[in-house]
Image (cartoon, rainbow over all chains, first blue to last red):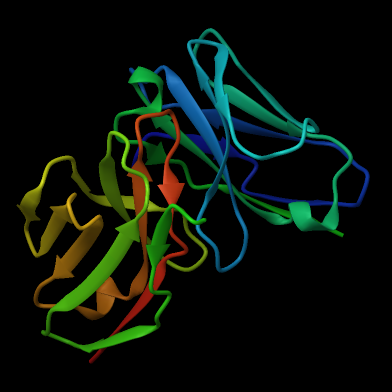
Length: 113
Length: 110
């Protein structure tokens, strides 16, 4: 177990709705990175939060947003859901802005109908 | 151009044999590499990290890094059925993110 937790584990939404996913980082870690993993693909970097600030963003539209709280837990928000947003959403916990080893939580499986 | 490439497989190896997984990369920035194992429906689990040229061994696993040739490999000795999974190669090229390959599906045949 990595000590990284995510909620919920599964979620079903319809197109156009909004969703919030949550992640609690491992004790002592100040960095949370979010990844999207489509079926049969490797995880794709969405963005990272380091000490409550966004510290890099991948090629995802602005309807993907997030924040990090003072206890270093984090949220990923997705607005105006599209069918292609169906995926496994992973958060990874680390130190030093993500340059060290990243440890993944169990993921949230999102299905958009 | 994809920065990290893996043969998607599937790769089938008899139980007890050596499984060899390979990964190539194109970025020449500061590099560290990670091998993750992912069982179906689960999240990636760290197997090995490697930062410098050469071999790094941990139990039945050996990671190899060759920066001049831009490849990373993972050897699994004495393969067990429980090693059947998708193996993800990931690189950190001096920034905040991990760049993943598409993964290689490994099946150990009893």
